[in-house]
Structure formats: structure tokens, C-alpha cells
Image (cartoon, rainbow, N blue to C red; front, top):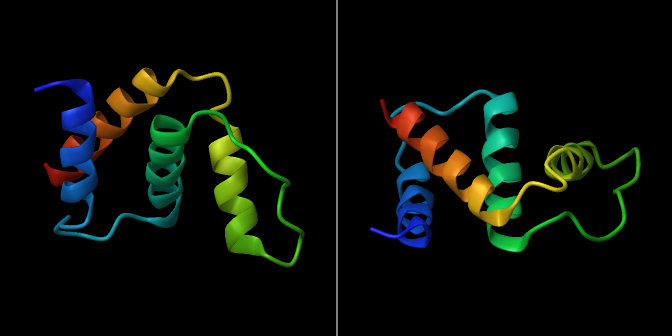
Length: 84
């Protein structure tokens, strides 16, 4: 199975985890998915009053410079670990 296929499967698997991950793990999942599917963060950082969007943006921005392939592999590995 190609990395892209593994990434797509991990995305599907992420919706069926037996336990809901904690918020920090959810942010990591989000950031790895966005980096793996879209590349480096784009757009303006959300304002101080939009806490959730700002946290998501900051998590994604933290991966700036990570290749899409590397982010996809980390995403696949993290979802596999959470399925454990």
C-alpha cells in the first residue's frame, strides 16, 4: 500500500478510535493531517478571541518545513498507535 493510501486509511480509521484522544493529541492529529494534505500553513493567524482556531493554526504552524510525506507518515504512525 502506498503512503497516500495508508494516509487515506488512517484518516478513515481516525474517525473510529475506541477512545477520544486528549486535546493535545487531537491538535497533533489535526496539524499532521493538514501538513500532510496541504503543506505549510497558509493564511492569517486567527485573533485572540477565537481560541480553537488559533490553537489549530499554531499547531499546524509548528510543523512548517516538514515535508508532506513525512507528515503523512507521522499521521499514519500516530493513528496506528492510538488504535492500539
